[in-house]
Image (cartoon, rainbow, N blue to C red; front, side, top):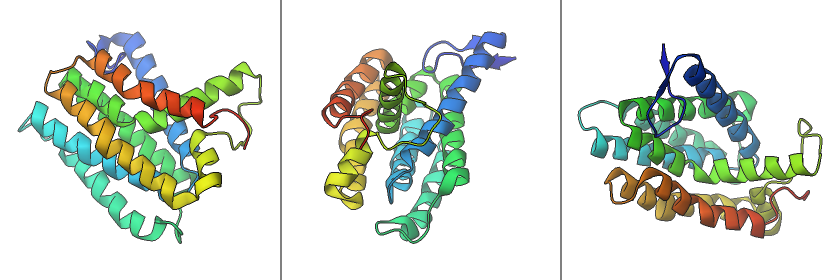
Amino acid sequence: MVAVASVGVTPVAGITGAALAVVFVAWLINLTNFMDGIDGIAGVQTLTVCAAGAALSQVVAPGSGLWIEPAVLGAASIGFLIWNWPPARVFMGDVGSGYVGFMVAVLTLRAALAAPVLGWCWLILSGVFIVDATFTLARRIARRDRVFEAHRSHAYQHLALAWGHRPVTLLVAAINVCWLTPVAALVALSHVSGPAGLLLAYLPLLAGAVRFRAGDPC
């Protein structure tokens, strides 16, 4: 049995790899659910991440067919966004966000197995959700909050209270398209190593999480 234990690095075989893959999938499912808290944000995240992931798959592994599933998921999110764009009339809900998180996790793992550099690319592309959710959870754990209870303490929630839903959703789209996709492209083209690209991509996001008080109650 082979499973990806360290995305973007040499896949680890056996129970260790399988266990780490399960943890990764579980975290992506949960963080997508955490981040699906304002109109349009999860749909925009799905569309931009999947579109970039599909394009980079063709760059790194042309002819592999790795682009097909992310392209389909991204296209489906367009139809959803027609109804979920602020002010939303239809919502994704826990089941929808859980499915999206599961699919992005599986696509990331599959890409890493096919070409390790693509694993780094998918991690970079998912940076907005990963950084905000992980930093928020870490702060809540450090403060000894009851982490299984509902809360409003993500950076995007603080911004939404100050700016409204639409500007924050557009900001996420802009970060993904104008920052994370170019960094992921540098990694895909081997101009920057995977770990260096991840650090480069995440540092401004981490600074933003600190600036906008991720982990503090709204």
